[in-house]
Image 1 (spheres, rainbow, N blue to C red):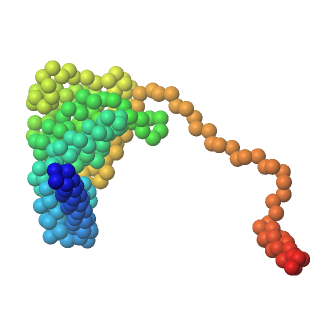
Image 2 (cartoon, one colour):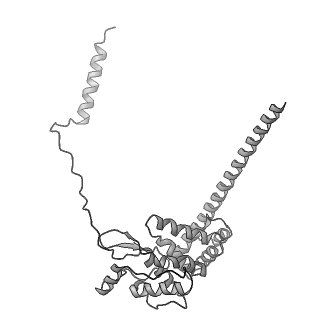
Image 3 (cartoon, rainbow, N blue to C red):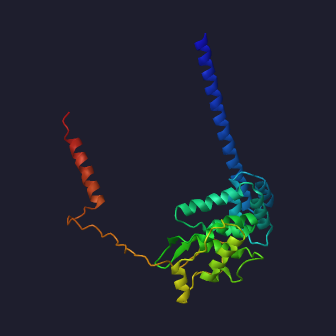
Length: 277
């Protein structure tokens, strides 16, 4: 009797566990489907759909909202609704922290994240961006003189926010070594980074300034289009790419497929006619 009760309890537990997993999967599927449906309506200019999406607190809504934010002009109602929805979403801070951290771990620069944070221009956005003012690791871009650098992207994002106490009034696309140092000192003074943090600008950047080469080869960061920062990178060895050669010909003539097919058919007919009964 005790064994039967144990087996019954185990069976009941398994059934309940399976139902719970199915319910969770259904909820996730439903949330994803609703978000996708709303996204389609927003793409058609349905402002009421954008308002519906703004009430979805899940982090899954943030990528949709950021895409819409970057698609609409700043003077449109859609832009303002999308911006406010991202700001009030409780997952926004965590979402962008994780995005920038993940990109940096892969030695990359998440330009889109920096751009959206510059559009939000909130105290939380400043807090997220500021630590990257000190990250000058270089990721090589396309070509010998292009690179992406977190510190440059961070400074440009902060400059695009038009903060009232910004340490420089230069356009973000015209920043030089002195401007990056100014932003670093500003961040330390604002206690946005640990007090023991030291200012630092790499030698290659100061040398570029000294040789009158622009530190950033780009215009001012765009407000509603994908922002790509292009900067001269330190010297690096470039390995030329050699295109694979075509394989040598075997020297045998290639029989046309039509003739080959005809020969095969003829052989088959011959065999069938001479097949012994």
